[in-house]
Length: 299
Length: 274
Image (cartoon, rainbow over all chains, first blue to last red; front, side):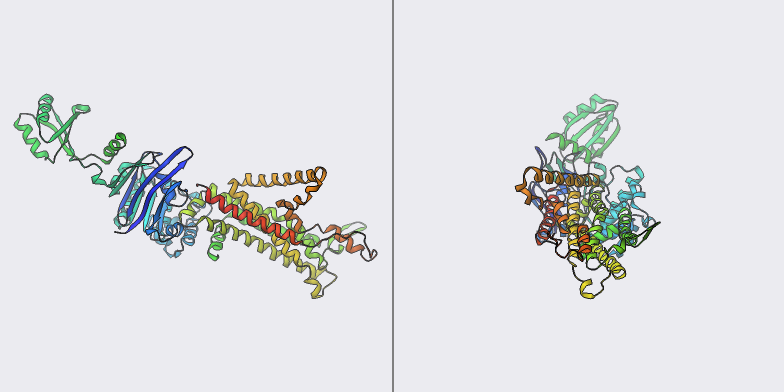
């Protein structure tokens, strides 16, 4: 598998604050990566460094096996950082023409990318007349101009209204389905969960986890249980070999964590045989959010 | 080089403020010529600037280059704002992300400066040539194309001045600050000159190295020379001969300043996190 980006002990200090601390990870072609981290965890600084706008304090990174300069490599990358930045008095089309000149690509693709983000009929309008959602969509169009090897999106739905968020997500999903490598930084976990195959979790500039989403927490999931006869249910869970531990949650809900693979059907049967009638039974895996909170809390 | 110039040209072409200011600049430029050819009639006084000998070849090169240089302030505003707006719109950041290197960014700005300087110089040459051909008392080819070093000096003066504006724009990131700083520098140089003149005459050589003064030294004021030319017929031997030539030392100093400004802009940008 082709490596697109390699980070080695990348570090950035702002005075006494270490924003990014010896971060190392690889980005492989074809995967969709999510960078997760609370606000101020160093996500944007990390992206800023690999995108040539922030100077690393130490460590290194290399694009495409390191055989080209960073700014030339960036011509093969599409990236949006925070807010969409364009020339306000230029039309969308002229802004994209400028990007084509910088990236040295043919301007004939402009109409095509504007079509992808549904802005074709507004292409002659000044950028400053656009709504935030439209600006963000234009930024995505701009990032797609060069058929990038990787698309980097930093908080692409920040500040958008629900409709705008939905539109951006649909666009991202569509692009991801076409097999493009994507690196998505976000603190919105459901956003990442919906599209990413791999995650990199950072907190205070330190990497906590990097790998496939499903391996982030290699547990067997848990049951959510509810019964009128709560004490009997608890007794059963205490004695059960497959249940590692259980917690009482609100609404008399019991959360029983599995220590080995176990089916909901079997548990239901056992309960019934012990005269415990369940009013609620769900087996599920922890959401990315729960896994993430656990991970960032533990360390 | 062509790519970088086209990038900058595309930005300027689509920037309304830059377009309007440049237009005003070039119109004023031509208007000066028109103004000079107007005949003033105040009763008994019949006066026409053009008849005072200012448009005689080769003096016209010197005179026009000196006068028109004041208009460079207009373009200074354009240049400062074309740099600082890249900061305020955060488009500098986007340019870098899109694959422009910091060096290329500075170079593209410098090519913009070069473009403005070349256009101004070409216009100065054409306008002066036309005015000269209309009003000059001498029209031999040898005389017409003598003393052209003033045109070159004008070009260099613009390069130096615009490079300085570029640097201030990069340094301060806001047009108002950069222009204010330019004004402060002007006052500061004035104070130094006064100080040196009255307190430390041995340091007088320093004055020629000050950035604004060195640019001013490129083209010496032409007014006293006009008097000399007019009175030359009656006074064959003047006791004191002032040199109006474009000095090599001034050329070298301005070239060095231009290089320093552009190079520091690049180094400054390289050091910065955006």
